[in-house]
Amino acid sequence: EDACFYPWIADSEVIRYSLSAFQAMKTPAQIDDWFAATLRDEKSLNLGIYLQETDTLIGYAGISNLSATNRSGEYFILIGEKAYWGKGVGTAVTKQVLALGFTEHHLNRIMLTVSELNPGGIKAYTNAGFVVEGRLRAACCRDGLFHDKIVMSVLKEEWQPTEV
Image 1 (cartoon, rainbow, N blue to C red):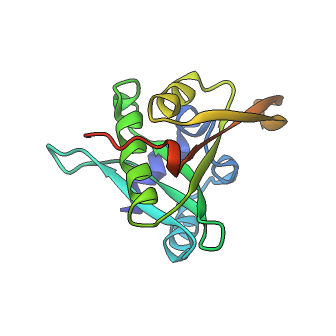
Image 2 (image 1 turned 90 degrees about the horizontal axis):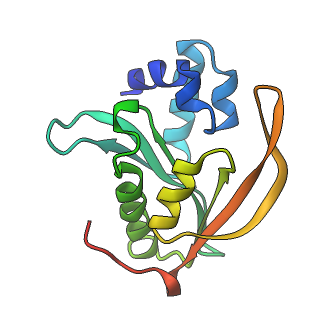
């Protein structure tokens, strides 16, 4: 299934605000190595995003840096198929992953960082219940320019389970 990642990571628009590691990946072998390491990471919950109708993989999401001690983790999502951007997929998936994090994984806090230049991401995260808690100044460099990352989180006590 990692073959899906080849065109996604090759598309600068898809990865613009995603993992910094993606910016440096240029070959299928590099992507294969990243994918294998990701699947081996026991501190990470990795889930494919599939279309219900066709079972087509369109992205991946999950929670990384899982801490049993702090009962916390960091949310991530990548929708690789641009045809599904702006259609509520990000919000729906985010709500589903939060539900897994707070129920099955018994987390108390799920956080994320999002580029201030990614209004679609900020909107999806806000719609799913994340609140802004701070700003990492000039924490991201894309196209030779620095910009801030916004830190957002949801605590279990504020989380509202929803029908998805």
